[in-house]
Length: 323
Picture (cartoon, helix red, strand yellow):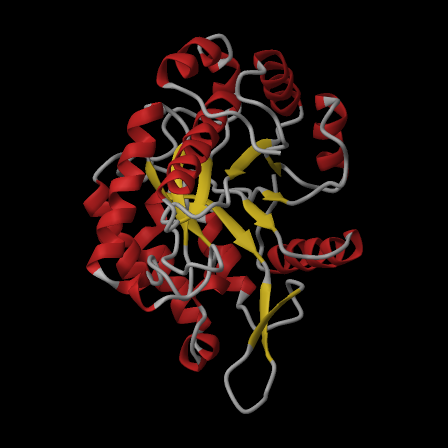
């Protein structure tokens, strides 16, 4: 269920009381322009994913994630005006060292209908306000699509200057409406809409020109050609080389190639595909801001368990640790 849109005045009034608690969930200097003195030493990776538990009890919510070996969680469904629940969730997660990785707001910011487009913009503003209030690392959405039928679908104009200018303007509007101090606003990378590469994301960062605009890394979403599929190690290194300092949160999944008469990549359980998780984890552990790595897009708890075990084992074999 969609939470109500929030004005800037409402946001200040409802979040000032929980700001100090939210700060417990992440350090204030997460996204400094320069890495700190220990940037070369691997950090403990924060792995997270769905815990398949109701979020009515914040203590049980945090404990369920810890029981699975997670130190990061998706933000549960909660209204940004519900300051008591936000406070309780922030406190429980801080006690158990569980970071709220991201608030997802999956809507089309470029919807062809003007009223729907405005509604979607308000939904994402609400999401960033919630991320700021609860201490989440980011609020994330895709940049949008000009496809009139599928909100995330392909369209030839998704790579045009018109598209780029519109998503830059939207990012600025969203950030200016909330003025977050901790949470970042991010676009998730896509294979058929900008940002579709490290370079296009870097160009977008420079155009938005705001410290509250971050990067959401999902390397599987960038694999849209055989070359990127076979050379995904190079793709991962390029992402971290060019975007590392801005990464707020990451997604974990895997890809396989179903061989037929055209190119067809399919998402599968991490460890059952071709993504170079050793490189992914090593590069992630080098980032001083310790972005969470969040499992997604699996259909049942058993699949998440298999993906979790693969990532933990791969990391340990590489000499890495998990928070």
